Image 1 (tube, protein in one colour):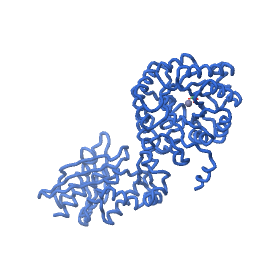
Image 2: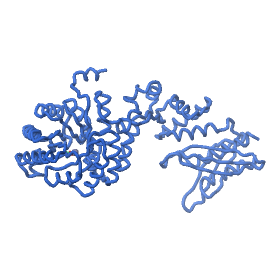
Image 3: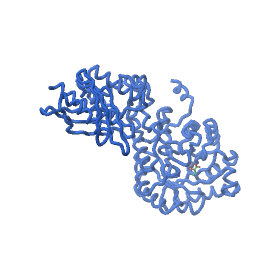
Image 4: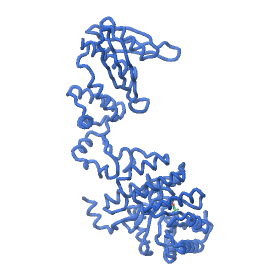
Length: 505
Ligand code: KIV
Ligand code: ZN
């Protein structure tokens, strides 16, 4: 494979550390607020997932942040528990007060931040940074230093700041692409150049403003970064941070680089974070999206059923996902047969053709056929009598406000065409009354039970109607139909039952 040849030329590390910032930068996602209890639930899950460090908040921000950090620390997790702090005494004290074992301290270094936000000179920023790192180290904690907006900072100044904090005892430096302006080539070069300046490990923190956070994190690793900041589901300020699940799976599968993440827990973790934060994943989200391992097109499904790798870059179980074969207009007969096998549904060729036809028709109308839809359609096809004494030739219904619901039904009964119109409490009742009245000359068949269910959500959901009908002689039969129109489903179910009774007489 081409990628294998390229990999040989890369100087990749054996392992990369994952610094999770879901509970800090992730919580800065617009509209997201996580309560201390919810933070604890997520922290426990992140620990089981295997993150190396979890940044649990910004302790200076509130009592709640400090309390949550303290409680998380008291859980005795395997991961290091980190708090964020500006290079300010009060922030550092708040972090110390929250019992964390790791402080991530930062200051803006770019001209924009210096001039408009901080109103500080390069010299002031440099000395504050050194003081902050010394303060953290004096208290015996791990110190990670970030030059905020590093990627828009003059390289000479950036080198000076990072060298100064290294001399002050920082354990690791972090390079934030605060507004996501880097492209892979520039990110790779920046990390390479910084590797020539500092000896301590380098970490990266990439934002996704141009959709490049994951790519920029990966090239940073190629250039020598040993730690990546990431968030579950790519949550974070504005367009978010590098998504943990994407970074980890690319590292593991494309580069063959290890992490401590238990990849089979990724989907469950993504779902937990999504439920708690209320941020739903788009279906096509890489790795954890609902469609990440779903196949609809006939050609793809054929390939996947023969050998999954034809259209899957990794096994779904590896990330805790499951393969899904989705029925729609691209679905081939093979995929439908495989689903029927899964549900132990057997049918003859005519029945299968009728089912296949219905799936295609629904697909042409733009509808996805879910597993539940397919099972209901199959049950309907299987239950249908082979012979029809009463056939529907057509019907219309009229209903509305201040209108008496009326149905006109045209049936072919034993070769004779009959039509009638009847009223009812609603269009379904009117249609069933009309059918019963037309059939009455042949047999007096009554409706004994009527059930309707929408199989999947939405106003275009398939309606499944189930009826029980009986004649005066005590012959009874069930009838079933599954279509999108509730009146049509009711008419078909009633005729299904009537035909069964008439054939069985
Ligand atoms: O994006 C950023 O620059 C940050 C800093 C606090 C490191 O989140
Ligand atoms: Zn950030």
